[in-house]
Amino acid sequence: MKAWSMFVHSVRLVLNNLDVALRVSLVLYLVQAASQYMNYKVAQSPMITLPGGSQIPDVSAGDSLLMVVLGLGALVASLWIAVAWHRFVLLAEMPKGWLPQWPSGHIMGYLWRSILLALIVAVVVVPVATVFALLGSLVLATAASVGIGSYAFFRLSPVLPAIAVGQDMSFGDALAATRDSGATLFGLAGLMILGSLLMQMPTILSGDPRSVISLVYGIVVGWFATMIGVSLLTTVYGHYVEGRAID
Image (cartoon, rainbow, N blue to C red; front, side, top):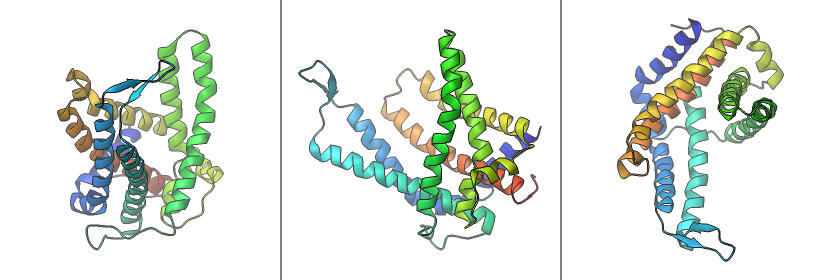
């Protein structure tokens, strides 16, 4: 099954280059971890009731500002990690220290294409979800939305690594490149969803997803999920656009 081969190839990219993966992402991922901790701290805050009856966490202005700053920092860090990993795998660009080169010419384009990609996927998903919801099946609506949304995302995803390596690729070009990959990318989407569920299962089964242990577990697993997710995009681009073989 080609989807399985692509998934395994993406995981091996991380495991076989673990030292580079850490140098590309570890320092930057600490910003994301700090953001996750801040969100956890806010979630643990006591609630206050507003005059209208709604409740919000009782958080100081300083903590609110810090949460926003760390959230923006986490966004920039995630884009930086993605661009750096794409460039390592596709261009053999090695980080020189514990921070990859700042991708000044690519990061805004990567962000803009990510936003456009998310909007396109939403346009595809909303009608499907609406139809199933009207039929009274929220479970099928959720499953169909996640499945079709993930498939559409992978079909269009080559635009992201393309930006990272300095290539100008339109969404139409991405669809053309992945034209004959329907079953494979649908299977790859399914494997990604299954892998995500398996990673979250210990937290779900713990009985206390808001515990410190669950937070630490989520941060550690989140690093692997981040790197494997970016590797999946790199693999799709490398195979369907550049014609690279899948080991």
